[in-house]
Length: 286
Image (cartoon, rainbow, N blue to C red):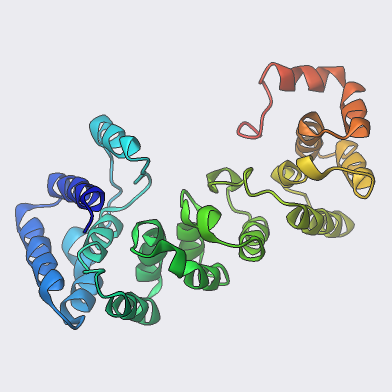
């Protein structure tokens, strides 16, 4: 394991040691030793399945020192439960030297996993060896309809935005809107905005409006950069919506757009424009 990876593993273990009883830490440490040494995956499979019975499932509260230590390495372990953190640590014990063996072991875990195990595996994607090789697995996970699995992929997970192609990324974002997820928890949302996604989201907004259903105002966030003559009427409808939140979303989209008619639309609402300029209205608040 590279030194940086070793240091990350040690940070995780120190957090686990701080939280779990000594006998549980001893159990984890012994299983880690066996996993590092084994050629097959018997200990890995057993330990990965047994973790929650040993650790419990309580949320992990990181200390400021731990947060800073992770931030210095541009890493985050926010919003983890102790079993998910321990499972990540278990995965880090697999020797990645033999790529084929490494893949077989982790793919076997995916194939046999129940929903909590799947969530732990998908949340661990950013930390696995050969990260670029897990794109297909991540895309498959996006099609999953289990809530906690969707959350593990979508929320506070840097893997999708860093490694997925536009087709899979767009599917993730659209599914997040379908499932009414917290869009603000998707990492890389603004950076990965693209015209094809904007087209799909405008169509989705029109379908919602035609069915007299509310449109998530965050949707217009991803259309903002791509407002033009082809979709300006759709933005105008959102701006004139009786739903104040959708109106605010359209106003923010116009504010960040480079399309002059959109800027003029916002200029006709000076109070709303002033709220945005004074940062009293932004995507996070909305």
